[in-house]
Length: 169
Length: 98
View (cartoon, helix red, strand yellow):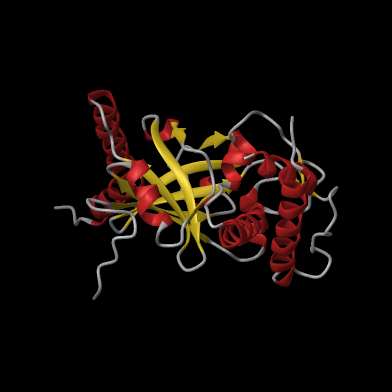
């Protein structure tokens, strides 16, 4: 297998973006939040070790609604990069085009992110790794929240079923 | 705002070529008209997000080939303010200023 370093070194996969009709219907334990500017509601789940960003249409002009109508579910890959500006330079030479200004992501501890696109690889979100202590702490809290959501939505119900099915003496 | 007419005409032509490329993949009835007044972004525009992406990529590739340097459509459109509606003429004029 060939290792393609499209976004530079020390890059790791962060999450995949998945379009859904309803986050609550898919996973009631998830509490979505609305990103009005992007026309989406967002929620996160862990799926067999992979973080999945659930994207539900919000508003009449949501870009997600069109994707769902067209049957497109998998929307983007997100990679975490140590240096966003360096990653942008590297991927531009591989045919990626920047599709947004460099923005801040409130859901990811206000870290910097950007959208890029290539005809070959499609839509990719680049998210900068936590750079300062505050961002690192917030990042740890996010990871903890994901673990807590997993316990609440998956582990606890399974445990409850197992306990109910245990023979009584 | 100063716009060089020669530059404007060149960018208008490149935009039309990008629209041609976009229209090849558009469903019937969803194609964009090649006119300065065609809305690329805004409430009255009919370009969806994927269409916008295809247009940006096609335009940046054509500009790079024609001008020999990279120009960012995103920076041109969003780097200088809160303008919410963009026509083909608006974008050609902004690019000609760069």
